[in-house]
Image 1 (cartoon, rainbow, N blue to C red):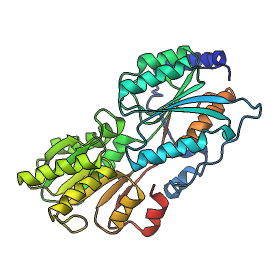
Image 2 (tube, rainbow, N blue to C red):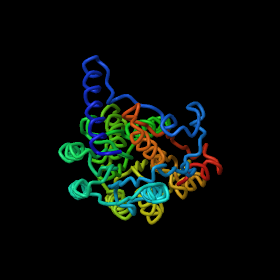
Image 3 (cartoon, one colour):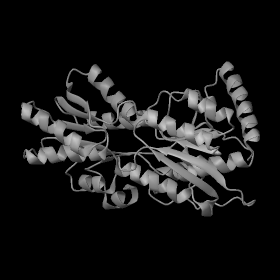
Image 4 (spheres, rainbow, N blue to C red):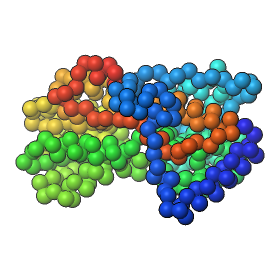
Length: 357
């Protein structure tokens, strides 16, 4: 689609959004299941859908046009989740599927913004963004829109007007955190003394997974944070934090790690100190992302809980692009990936194979 045409469509979208806002609607908060965007299964069957299955093969445009995309992501070595996410994007945005893709990686917002400005100068057709931080994007996204470049958010939300992007394909990080905290509350401990290992501060994943725990700690006298520190998704940093708590002699009975790699590092410190962990043991271990090896730890009852974060967004992005190329704006601004939490006392070997990434 020519950039002038896309710019015109974006302008119409902005007017429509303004009308909806005046009428009391809030399209910024409207969501739809990911099944409606990519149609892999009926909504009622999504709970049992295989989260690890490969996306449907994209079809190259019939007119032979190559669609240029600039993809800005976090470091693929950050975690198993990010590695799977990057691989999914690279499998979709290929020459065979009608795309010319360029990739930029950073865990720093300013570096990502610089990469976005470069892609705009290069006149890509679409800018795909998984932001390191939720803030600071308004100016560069406005530049993209002025240039007729469509912006699609994936994996993470940002604090910017919805008029500045075509669609946001994300996990509900707040729900992930709330599901985990509700599960922990259900364990019925007399007292919760928690080591809280946070991800990169300011990221949507960190904010969502932290928010629910902070609220619970503030509301319940029996919930205490022994320490709350960022390990920046890193296993070694997490191990150092937990080791320092152990060395201090402070008692704790919960590890709440905001990704699997940090949970792994925490467990390494526990093992070194001969502190038991898992089902029926001294310390409850919680992680997020559902790496296959992490779910195996649940199956072996060495960990207690793992929250799913679905990394496979490429097929949904492809559909948004194909819709826009056909002259149709996305029906919904926000597409929420369906996810669940796993309990070590209930998980099965089939779950490990089906949901592990």
